[in-house]
Image (cartoon, rainbow, N blue to C red; front, side, top):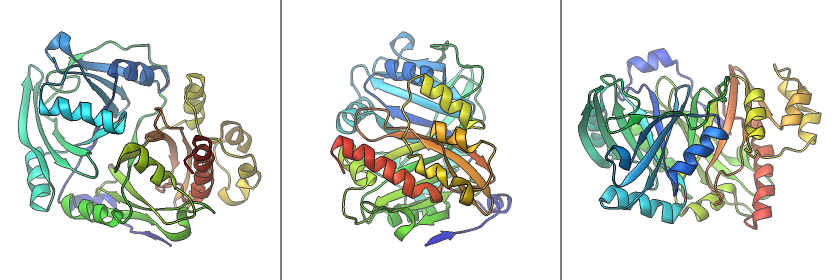
Length: 381
């Protein structure tokens, strides 16, 4: 069963108790931020724009800020832990491997957003505070979400520096490609433990005023061997979308079970990146060494019968293993990378939308089967 709650972004915005401007940054804790920055520069075509480290006063951590369009990734590693934050990052990498510690959200008023969230049940991590430099002032606050992930609430309307006070502009590691591989963060997916999905959906409903956008249960996301359940929450403008997954009882381990086992608990499973030319993006990323999940040729034999015509010929979709889904609003093209670190945890999705605001329901079975083939190779199915 699939339930869709329809709302118009413009009218939802007017009544939004927790207004947001969009995703501010996805912040990763990694073992080697310098090497991670190089990988995402060369393989994902991102541009290094800012840096914080020992050379400009940060004795504990090194952080590299990379962008593509409005998408911003921050990679931080610990040089020598001396504070609670440094110890948290070091322990996070030791326990979970490279992973997302912060889904930072830009808000028009960080103080008001934090107050609303805490008043409605959020666990506050950091009360609102200001950071200043010659480029202006940023107001920051942070609340906890699933696992050890947090949402930093960022108010940066009074700031025009490269990222945050304490960061300096940095030259690109490599010259970024003339054509961007992606333009924005489309959605960020969290995996939570069995029985916890509805709790966290309720958290976003209550704490941030997010509404339920889509729901996938029962046979929606299932194969012969594994299954999961998923609900999608979003802000009133649909700029911030968070699908929340939990495992479902099945014959064998699902991708969610595998993630929870190897990540050591709940966390961010994958980040979907919006592109306006998925063919060019996939070609460039494959050439740079990014590995994508495979899709059997049989998927494409009958694709046109149910997905209809798209801007990309079926033979090109077959060649690049790109998936298609169509709903009442239009269609989308999507493809998923393999995990981008040795642990089978975090991966990425490339998505090109043409009207559809869905998440590829028609591809769930094909995607799950592709993931199961990789799980079997790893001995984790």
